[in-house]
Image 1 (cartoon, helix red, strand yellow):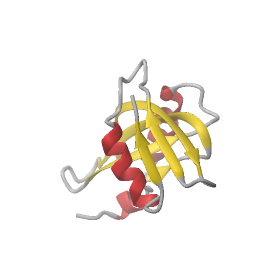
Image 2 (cartoon, one colour):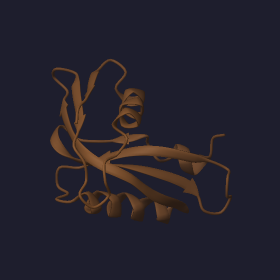
Image 3 (cartoon, one colour):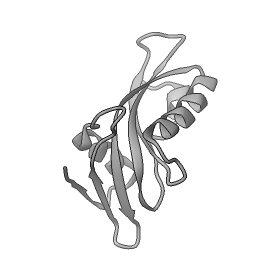
Length: 118
């Protein structure tokens, strides 16, 4: 089921280069069970996984959405080679499901080679 607020939140928001990322579940606060979606966020200017989560969470809460962090890791994104590597883990949040992250990344980058590593 789609929801206007859910649709307003992109599945993927990452940058170029190497950076930390978090996997986040969002849901509608007001209409419990109306939708649930998992998103990927990663920003080079965020030193910690918690910084990424706090930025995303604040944005989502302003839209009436609940958030739950599912784990973290690192991403290497090379647009010129159309390659993404997903690996590592967050000390604070634990390891994200990198295979799930790959599936979500493919929704935005279908023509990329996406590698999952430990």
